[in-house]
Image (tube, rainbow, N blue to C red; front, top):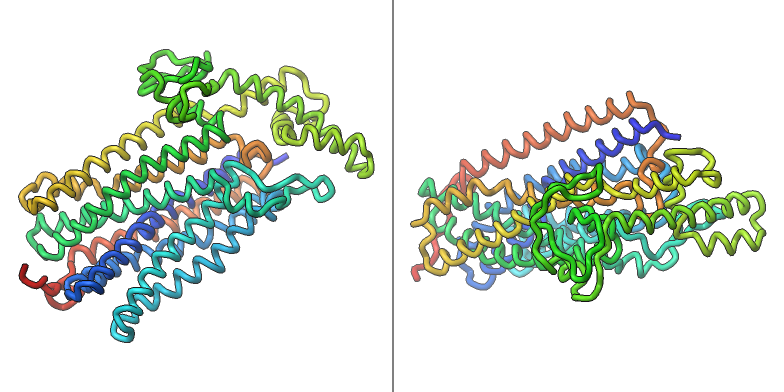
Length: 517
């Protein structure tokens, strides 16, 4: 058995490197598309100011892109170093999207990024526009393949356990690619990236207007950011609802924990706006509820129930019992692979095999597990309710704040009154970090809410780690934190320096003014 401290440190290390990396990803997604929009405007209007806008924001995109690459390269190697059994057990399925991402998306993006910067005076306007949109396409395709891999961890489909190899193997690659959980996560994540890019452009442009510098440049940047950000922020909420719907179908315990829903209510279930979850007594000591709302969001009906945590634990107890039968059959097959009765039993109860593995926390002899052990293992399927409950609500509140901010920004653009509302400009400037906060909270909900599973319902997290020592884990964790923090400081320094100097320093003159009228 792997030392539980090693497992927790491996989780902490991957969480730290993933959260660091995702400080760069959403801005890359958002700015890549904004660059495409700006250069398309230049292609249509032929006004030099739009070319200058594309070049300046492209510099900030390039700084961020480089740091994203540097922090992202090490993440995939952790599967082979810190999560060796995980890689052995599900590598056939999980590795395929990652390989495609590297070959198809990352190389595409990296190649065209170089051409974007060095091709301005060497290519026609149309050819360079194509390059810019290829950068955006590569960024989004990269996110797609990563999220297909992550979506499979949330909702494993298209794969089957092979008792002869003792591994999960691809059964239907189409189902892996078009996993509804992965598709919902993809559109939700890239929309959040578009919000991040839009608010970054909005906030930096507000800085220029507050300083009364590069006014034409800033106003046009705000116009693009306001329109694109409004569409993106509305999409985040709508597509977040789709993610919630798929989770309600495939990850019922996660939804119940996020909502602090202990008991199953008559359909449609109410939504807890605020609550004080009591995890010891499995109830809420205080709650304010909106009737029907959760049922309508999670099931899109008024007749389908949303199961509560207590009832899901009872269901999972039966899954553990079924898994014990599958495990016993598996032990027989490992000695005699031709045993027909054992094959039949394994096929019948295979879906419970992962739940039986939860018993390894309490015993090395799974077929002899007691009822008390089964009961404890079933309760282990409940993630920690309190942090999930509040993290989700802060994330959702920020989502609606972004909608309001971009609605007001769009109204100011239409009325040509952006410069007059300096309070709004200050708000936009200080709101720049909030999309990153929201994105990190969203990943916390997605990943922490999946616990105790590496692969939902198949492989418990505590069984996926490598056989390392606590000292090994502390050494590598410390190294990663120091390295990634250094890269973050470098990123912030370069970004702030570039923004403070402004477009006039980059071009050697003020950006080309727009034509009159």
